[in-house]
Image (cartoon, rainbow, N blue to C red; front, side, top):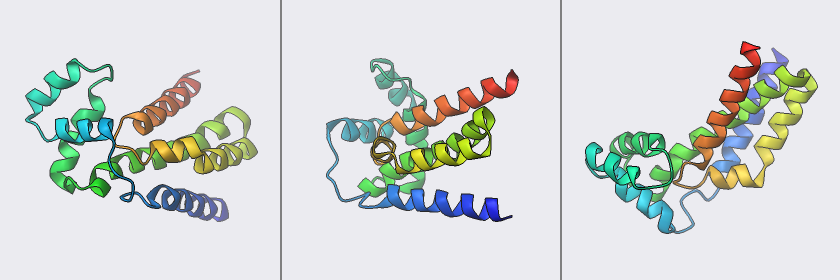
Length: 145
């Protein structure tokens, strides 16, 4: 019970770090492009994404997200916050799977405080999603072995 309480508390702290000043910095070019593409009809979103170097999954999810959450700087960046928090939880699970309980806590702490992961969680781009999916793939691979 204590472990779960501590785990939830640390994930919430990491969530708070990712929310800090989330809407404050101005949207930069790539973020604006992502937000604009997400507002287009889904067929056009797919067509525009097909010309990009990034896979379309993030844009498809953002397409639905802006319809539910809106188009403000905070709203479009919040999807990445959620992916970033998922990455932290996955880092803990992956660390535990690879090296035991202590390794899980270290992985959680490193992921929670990583400046790079925090930054990725505050951008309207696919970086936080990619980190989460990579962690998930690594965890699934270890489970399958």
